[in-house]
Length: 159
Image: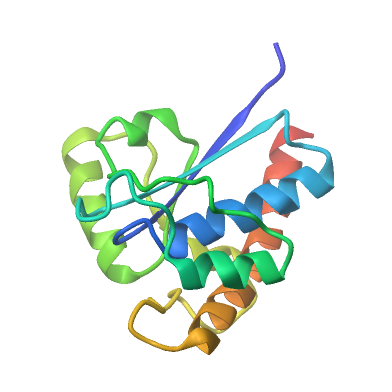
Protein backbone atom coordinates (compact mmCIF):
# COMPACT_ATOMS: atom_id res chain seq x y z
CA UNK A 1 0.00 0.00 0.00
CA UNK A 2 1.22 3.49 -0.85
CA UNK A 3 2.10 5.59 2.18
CA UNK A 4 -0.12 8.64 2.56
CA UNK A 5 0.54 11.79 4.54
CA UNK A 6 -2.37 13.71 6.05
CA UNK A 7 -2.07 17.45 6.70
CA UNK A 8 -4.51 19.59 8.71
CA UNK A 9 -4.41 23.40 8.81
CA UNK A 10 -6.06 25.10 11.80
CA UNK A 11 -7.07 28.72 12.45
CA UNK A 12 -9.78 30.35 14.54
CA UNK A 13 -12.89 30.34 12.34
CA UNK A 14 -11.84 28.28 9.28
CA UNK A 15 -12.96 30.97 6.83
CA UNK A 16 -9.73 32.91 6.09
CA UNK A 17 -6.31 31.52 6.94
CA UNK A 18 -6.76 27.75 7.16
CA UNK A 19 -8.89 27.36 4.00
CA UNK A 20 -6.36 29.58 2.21
CA UNK A 21 -3.58 27.31 3.46
CA UNK A 22 -5.55 24.23 2.37
CA UNK A 23 -6.09 25.65 -1.12
CA UNK A 24 -2.55 26.92 -1.65
CA UNK A 25 -0.98 23.73 -0.29
CA UNK A 26 -3.31 21.59 -2.42
CA UNK A 27 -2.14 23.54 -5.50
CA UNK A 28 1.53 23.03 -4.53
CA UNK A 29 0.94 19.31 -3.94
CA UNK A 30 -0.89 18.93 -7.26
CA UNK A 31 1.96 20.72 -9.11
CA UNK A 32 4.44 18.35 -7.45
CA UNK A 33 2.59 15.26 -8.66
CA UNK A 34 1.92 14.04 -5.10
CA UNK A 35 -1.84 14.64 -4.94
CA UNK A 36 -2.48 10.90 -4.62
CA UNK A 37 -0.11 10.67 -1.63
CA UNK A 38 -1.04 13.75 0.45
CA UNK A 39 -4.45 14.45 1.96
CA UNK A 40 -5.21 18.02 3.01
CA UNK A 41 -7.94 19.47 5.21
CA UNK A 42 -8.59 22.56 7.32
CA UNK A 43 -10.66 23.49 10.35
CA UNK A 44 -11.11 26.13 13.02
CA UNK A 45 -10.95 26.04 16.79
CA UNK A 46 -14.19 28.04 16.99
CA UNK A 47 -17.71 26.98 16.06
CA UNK A 48 -19.14 30.25 14.68
CA UNK A 49 -18.70 29.50 10.98
CA UNK A 50 -19.39 25.75 10.76
CA UNK A 51 -20.73 24.93 7.29
CA UNK A 52 -19.91 28.35 5.83
CA UNK A 53 -17.83 29.06 2.74
CA UNK A 54 -14.52 30.90 3.05
CA UNK A 55 -14.59 34.68 3.49
CA UNK A 56 -15.23 36.28 0.09
CA UNK A 57 -12.04 38.34 0.36
CA UNK A 58 -9.96 35.22 1.04
CA UNK A 59 -11.58 33.43 -1.89
CA UNK A 60 -11.00 36.40 -4.20
CA UNK A 61 -7.33 36.78 -3.19
CA UNK A 62 -6.76 33.05 -3.72
CA UNK A 63 -8.60 33.11 -7.06
CA UNK A 64 -6.26 35.90 -8.27
CA UNK A 65 -3.44 33.39 -7.77
CA UNK A 66 -5.26 30.59 -9.57
CA UNK A 67 -6.41 28.83 -6.40
CA UNK A 68 -10.11 28.03 -5.94
CA UNK A 69 -11.23 27.62 -2.32
CA UNK A 70 -14.91 28.44 -2.91
CA UNK A 71 -16.02 24.81 -2.49
CA UNK A 72 -14.51 24.47 1.02
CA UNK A 73 -16.79 24.59 4.08
CA UNK A 74 -15.80 25.45 7.63
CA UNK A 75 -15.66 22.76 10.27
CA UNK A 76 -14.55 22.76 13.87
CA UNK A 77 -11.41 21.08 15.15
CA UNK A 78 -12.08 17.82 17.02
CA UNK A 79 -9.85 15.79 19.34
CA UNK A 80 -9.83 12.85 16.89
CA UNK A 81 -8.08 15.10 14.33
CA UNK A 82 -4.92 14.61 16.39
CA UNK A 83 -5.15 10.87 15.67
CA UNK A 84 -6.13 11.22 12.02
CA UNK A 85 -3.48 13.67 10.75
CA UNK A 86 0.31 13.42 10.48
CA UNK A 87 0.68 17.21 10.59
CA UNK A 88 -1.58 19.53 12.60
CA UNK A 89 -0.43 23.01 11.64
CA UNK A 90 -1.85 26.07 13.34
CA UNK A 91 -1.74 29.67 12.20
CA UNK A 92 -0.96 31.52 15.44
CA UNK A 93 0.03 31.09 19.08
CA UNK A 94 -3.56 31.22 20.35
CA UNK A 95 -4.53 28.39 17.98
CA UNK A 96 -1.43 26.52 19.16
CA UNK A 97 -2.42 26.96 22.80
CA UNK A 98 -6.00 25.82 22.15
CA UNK A 99 -5.02 22.72 20.17
CA UNK A 100 -2.13 21.89 22.52
CA UNK A 101 -4.60 21.81 25.42
CA UNK A 102 -6.55 19.10 23.58
CA UNK A 103 -3.31 17.31 22.65
CA UNK A 104 -2.23 17.20 26.32
CA UNK A 105 -5.49 15.45 27.21
CA UNK A 106 -5.69 13.12 24.22
CA UNK A 107 -2.24 12.66 22.70
CA UNK A 108 -1.80 12.08 18.99
CA UNK A 109 0.02 14.39 16.60
CA UNK A 110 1.55 17.33 18.39
CA UNK A 111 0.41 20.63 16.84
CA UNK A 112 2.99 23.06 15.45
CA UNK A 113 3.03 26.58 14.06
CA UNK A 114 2.67 26.36 10.27
CA UNK A 115 5.20 29.12 9.62
CA UNK A 116 7.91 27.03 11.30
CA UNK A 117 8.20 25.44 7.83
CA UNK A 118 8.97 28.76 6.19
CA UNK A 119 12.00 30.98 5.94
CA UNK A 120 10.13 34.11 7.02
CA UNK A 121 10.92 35.85 10.27
CA UNK A 122 7.17 35.76 10.98
CA UNK A 123 6.07 33.00 13.34
CA UNK A 124 2.34 33.58 13.03
CA UNK A 125 -0.02 34.00 10.10
CA UNK A 126 -1.90 37.19 11.02
CA UNK A 127 -5.70 37.07 10.90
CA UNK A 128 -6.71 39.30 7.96
CA UNK A 129 -10.43 39.28 8.85
CA UNK A 130 -10.61 42.83 10.22
CA UNK A 131 -8.15 44.37 7.77
CA UNK A 132 -8.07 45.26 4.10
CA UNK A 133 -7.33 43.27 0.97
CA UNK A 134 -3.56 43.66 1.41
CA UNK A 135 -3.81 41.54 4.55
CA UNK A 136 -5.19 38.64 2.52
CA UNK A 137 -2.36 39.01 -0.01
CA UNK A 138 0.24 39.00 2.77
CA UNK A 139 -1.34 35.88 4.29
CA UNK A 140 -1.13 34.11 0.92
CA UNK A 141 2.55 35.07 0.58
CA UNK A 142 3.34 33.62 4.02
CA UNK A 143 1.28 30.48 3.37
CA UNK A 144 2.84 29.83 -0.03
CA UNK A 145 6.37 30.14 1.31
CA UNK A 146 5.73 27.90 4.35
CA UNK A 147 3.84 25.46 2.11
CA UNK A 148 6.93 25.02 -0.05
CA UNK A 149 8.99 24.19 3.04
CA UNK A 150 6.36 21.76 4.30
CA UNK A 151 6.17 20.06 0.91
CA UNK A 152 9.96 19.67 0.85
CA UNK A 153 9.84 17.89 4.22
CA UNK A 154 6.97 15.64 3.14
CA UNK A 155 8.81 14.73 -0.09
CA UNK A 156 11.73 13.50 2.02
CA UNK A 157 9.32 11.57 4.26
CA UNK A 158 7.76 9.86 1.25
CA UNK A 159 11.08 9.14 -0.50
